[in-house]
Image 1 (cartoon, helix red, strand yellow):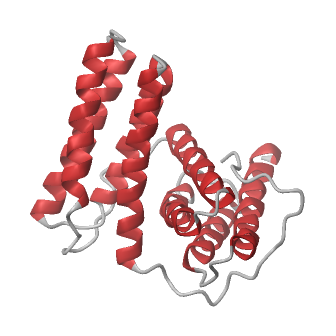
Image 2 (cartoon, rainbow, N blue to C red):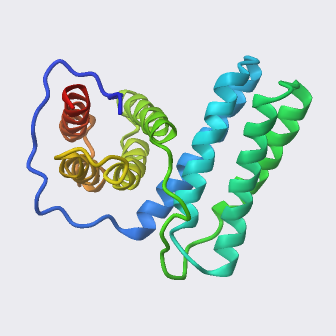
Length: 230
């Protein structure tokens, strides 16, 4: 999980005692992340960077899977299932012929699916992912989300940055199951808790919110350190 927040000083903040993430806020954050990553995919397509486009599509597929698992109701499952399907189709086209027109058509279909799902709210019971994500695409997606959060915070878009950290907290829950290394689950839990604390902070001043984001960076680096010494 290469840290997207680079600060000269890392401040460790206490992460106990923070309330769980409000589910409506998490859902809104996941919808926003899907839309944001469609924008990134368009940028890669405009640059004719098919490798990055395929990677972006993989991240979108993972985010859609996480979002789909929020509810078992039929409408939600169908809408997010379509996003998963269209993201997979885009990735296949980007990896294959690298045809600009085909990629644009696939991306347009994905964009429509994301917009169609955006108006829905999960009303049923949450589910587990049908299969755990591979560690590399998971880490690449976390890295991309952290980068978006950093950019949002640096430009004073505090609420957008908090939405991104809601998503980081959701992805962090998947990290704990990705390895059996001693202490890994605890480190991943610390990362998730720090991301939740940043996302649910009542602070609106970017300078104050940045302190919580520094804690996320610190937990992120702890995971990297553990990986290097395993």
